[in-house]
Structures are given as structure tokens and as C-alpha cells.
Image (cartoon, rainbow, N blue to C red; front, side, top):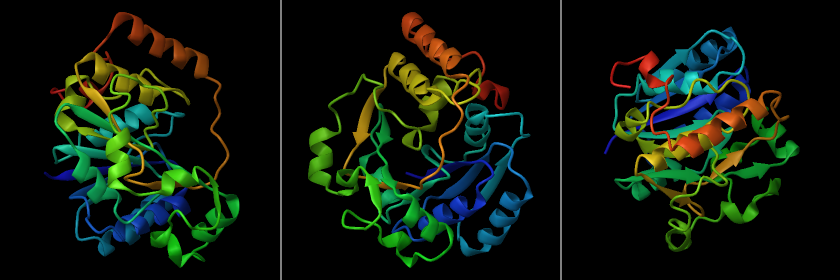
Length: 269
């Protein structure tokens, strides 16, 4: 099985650098990386160019014009460029445990998509990481200082994961696309992320709901595939109500494929 790691980003290149350094430290590398860039300025492109020679795999910069928060469209544009059958999706503020990619590969299963958890880091250790004062980026663990919330989620134990992984197979509660994995074929079946979502809002839950509507089930990567969330201010939620209404509509109508999604970039969508 070959994998594509998609990393979303927008104008926070120090965080993206930390994330890419954590990818370099992986025990198992993905087969390609695609940066899904929602309109960042030149600093992000320069960072990607400077990091690319350190990788033995392709690092693709997928950029779209900055017209506001359009992360669903940005993800679709990146997914449409993916060369491999399994997509691992993270945000550009998630520093990865060194087993992250191999863990996702290990738990991939036909008929399932995977939603992971995140351990929230405090501002102090986040600042150290961003200022390159924390060589322990690849050594973050349950015992690390500076964990603000979710220390238990830093536990990595296959047995615990197996006990909890299929406890909510048809639920979208608690889903975060900052740590998610799915089969490319399944994403194409539901036309990817719904690009009608603009601004912060449950586009990740809506995508998962359509996967469930199409007959797929959810697997939770708790206590496995551990990611550490860098501290930052929350995004504006001004469009939240409209986005939540979109989600309710999908749930009521049991919609499988959205109208505006991957089909904007590929006829297979």
C-alpha cells in the first residue's frame, strides 16, 4: 500500500517547518507529500523549496488564490493530485510522533476511514518548537513537559487502540480532519470535501457523514497515530451557523456525493 500525506497550511510557515521536520523523523515515510496551501504568501513557497532537498520523496506544493478560508477546496485540489491509494490528512500545526505514518498504514482497512486525536501543546513548548529551541520535536511523548490538554492521548498502545477503534463506526462526533486517513477511491466516490463550506465549520464531519452514508465505517485512532497540536489563536467562526446548516441538510437527506467537490479538478470526482 502506498500513501500520500496531505498537509493543509495557511501563512504559518514556522509551524509547517516543524511539521515537515517531524515527517523527516518518521520511521516510515509516506510515498509523497502534498502541501494543500489555502493562499499563503511567498514565505511558505520559499520554505517548501528549501525543505524539498531533504526528502527522498516528492514534495508537491498545491496552492490556490487567497479568497478567504477555503480549506475544503484546498484539500480537494491536493487530493486530485495524489498519486497513491491511501490518503493521510493532517493540518500544518500537527507535529507527528515518529510512528505516525506507520501506525496509519498498520490500521488501514478496506471499508473504513480513520479519524485520529490530537494532543494539545502549551504556548511555551510551542514557542520553543517554532524557534527551533526544541530538538525533542521527534521525542514528544506521554511524559513530555508542556502538554496543555489530552496527555492520555499521547499514550501509544496498539492493544488500547484495538479496544476503542470500532466503538463509534457510524458516528461523526469528535471528528477532526487535522488527523484523518481514507482511501482515495472512497473520497472520489463521495466527491471529496464539500467546497460549499467556506470559513471555519464542520466540513470534516460533513465529509465523514457522506462516507458513512455511502456505506463506509469509522475507525478511531485513539492511543495510536499520535499528533501534537501547536498552540495558536482559534480561527474566526463567523460562518459557523451556515456551515452547520449544510451539515444538517446532508444528514437529513442522507446525501452521498456533494455537488461541488473533487469534480472541480478531476472528471472522476
